[in-house]
Amino acid sequence: MAANRDEPSKYVTLVSNDGFEFVLLREATVVSPTIKAMLRDDRQWREATTGRFLEKVAEYFQYWYKNRDKLDVPDMDIPVEICLELLVAADYLGLDMCSSRTA
Image (cartoon, rainbow, N blue to C red; front, side, top):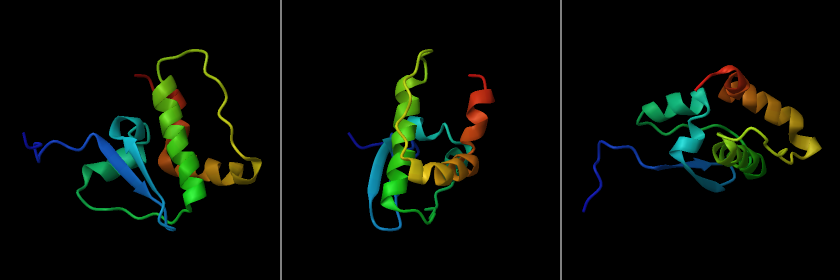
């Protein structure tokens, strides 16, 4: 049976500027209002970021999705050398607003 063309894919692919690809559940990535808005368009978006950095962003999306209904959530391991860059990305992706949103 062919997939319905009007129905969005269950997965999205994030691609770094150095060619690394991360395939994630769409539901996990839409925690970011920025990603959610980008996915509404049928265009491809490009943001300049390395695979090492995008890997941490993808890891966070999976971490959030896995723990979204839990109260006692373990800390996520973040290398010190990318903390500032991740804070900037969190702001850009609107993740800083996630803690204040209600379901």
